[in-house]
Length: 133
Image 1 (spheres, helix red, strand yellow):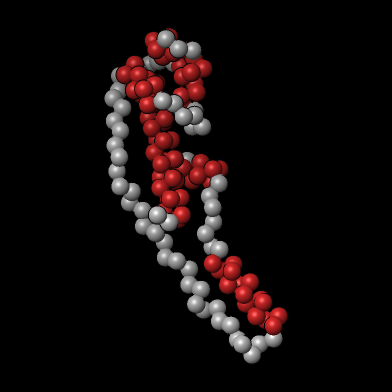
Image 2 (spheres, rainbow, N blue to C red):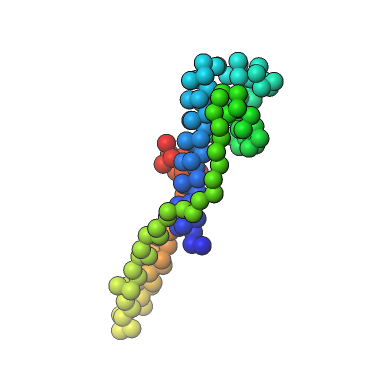
């Protein structure tokens, strides 16, 4: 699997995680519960509920299922094939070397070729979070 495809899948997964947590908070609010009331029902601290609702947390599935049960919703999980289309690869064939050129010119062309091949940009976590919102 290419790194472009992996990044696209990771980005989609982050969006889905944000949507899940937003849906749980919406369900809690629709049930008329605040974090403290839900925590009391679940037998945990309010900070546990707060942590579960934060986007940077990684709650256990069993915790999410219990949370959903107490706010009156069902947590459904699915494994699906991603609808990710890989973007076309950049064309580097337009950069040509001239054997008759002075050596400095060949070095400049080689640098352009290397930069063209390095168009893959790694997404930082902050890019993923920003795009997911």
